Amino acid sequence: MPQGARWPPGPGVLGYRVAAVLRTLTSLLVAAVAMAGCAHHAAPAEPAADLVLVGGDVWTMDPAAPRVSAVAIRGDRVVLVGDDAAAGRLVGPRTRVVALDGRTVTPGLVDGHCHLAGLGLSLEILALRGVTSADEVARQVAAAAAGRAPGEWVQGRGWDQNLWGGEFPTRATLDAVAPDRPVSLRRIDGHALWANSAALALAGITRDTPDPAGGRILRDADGEPTGVLTDNAMDLVEGQVPAATDAVLERRIRAAGAYAVARGLTGVHDMGLDDATLAVYRRLAAAGELPLRVNAYVAGDPEVAKALRDRPRETGDGTEWFAVRGVKFYADGALGSRGAALRADYDDDPGRRGTWVTEPAALHQAIADAVAAGWQVAVHAIGDAAIHEVLDAYQDAEAGRDDDLRLRVEHVQVIAPDDVPRFAALHVLAAMQPTHATSDMPWAEARVGAERIRGAYAWRTLLDAGATIVGGSDFPVEEVSPLLGLYAAVTRQDHDGNPPGGWYPGQRMTLEEAIRAFTVAPAYAAFAEGARGRLRVGMQADVTVLDRAIDEAQPRTLLDAAVELTVVGGRVVYDRAAVGPEDGGR
Image 1 (cartoon, rainbow, N blue to C red):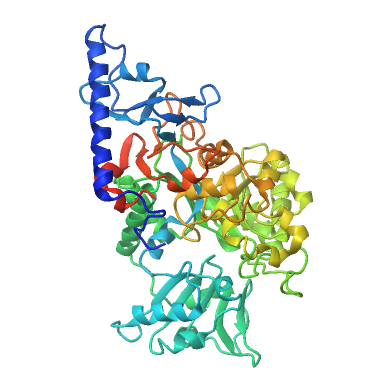
Image 2: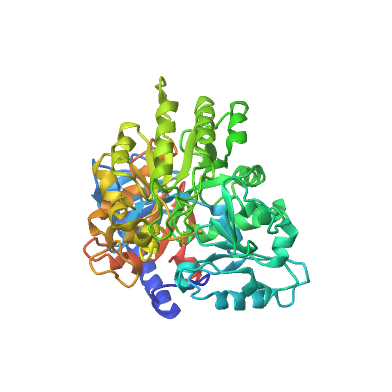
């Protein structure tokens, strides 16, 4: 979807403005009534609130009061969760009152696995998501290259060979339109790279270049590189791209943050960051210029793990806007590029079982080193072999320890039945992305076959076994909006409602479970459950307000909804009435 586009189409700007004015008048009326009531009674026992939401359908995620109509906020805290009358008693002359008229409010929605800094880059380069032919990719590369100096890189992301027949593309297609400059295009999952001959030459890749550990240089029948590299082999080309300056990193983070809060996110778990990016985040956080909370994970490998003892992780009380508590490792590649490590061969590529980005022995040692240093560990593991190895490593690392580790497995896309109960038994968090299932469903069963697919994207199986699912999107691999994740979780269907009834519908979540995965669970994974994830008096005022009611019986409401307000720590960081419907919110 093009940047700034809205799907499905909503009301025109004029209609939206009229509706906004009517809501404002209603809010003023509510405030006036509340103030009139206060004039005839004793002064309130506590100071007025800064922001009051009334007349809504508020999902608190608090078992003591799961659904209420009103929330009041003072400073950075929730001071009331209850009914409209009680909220009205906290209205003062400077209180902003929002009359919701039945619209939905949730605790601030959080993406539990994404790449915010990577989104900033993606907003600046070629967006190839949904492109249906290699020739169309080439056309966009040619347009991007026009007017650029020879030698200037053309970068992009989002191509998916499954949309044009399943065969990987070759460098010849790019050479035809950009022979005099390097081209580097990441696959949609980030685990394969399509490069032209100029980029291969800069990287020194020839027919004699060996595959690096944990990566693969695809070759034609004559042994020549085709231009596609997977996993660790991508570093050969990407290492030649000039590093972004701090100013560029800051620009990208600011743009990505604005994009995310406009889609209702109050926080993210940003995975796999280098020290330069972490430094920019710290500077923005110290200046109070982050629009949302960032729980960051260091980019890890076995060498980084050895140094973690000298780099203590950060702790906090859940009120902070930026923290680094964890480290992320890679076990395997991705299913779409046949890099996920499987116990048995790929059904559509006999003889191949995927790629170990980190060899099992080295992965075990890295996890042991990180846990010994007190770090939370998150490991990318998509295939059943990779998931099994990570669980084994976690079991060994936990032995003899009684501290609260909250270890995580990222993606958990193809899990063997015997590993399902181990998540709950080992207290391991399953960080899963619902939209991965609906993106992958056209081809996933061809990869792993009819039997293994029953353990793929198996949300219900894991929940029923007592596991905690941390919801996310893995953006920019998928779209940013968490509403799309909620929709995928409760329907297992695409935007057009296909397949009828849902893809393996027995794995669906309820709407409450889906919201929990994007609120309560990410707060727990960030060691912040005492401060965030629920709407409860005394907790941080992180809130997402939608422009309509959502209904599990009518899941289309999740696709039609836009974000009205995003509030982080009591600060309104996105207000659709102020920016207009065309500037975000979906």
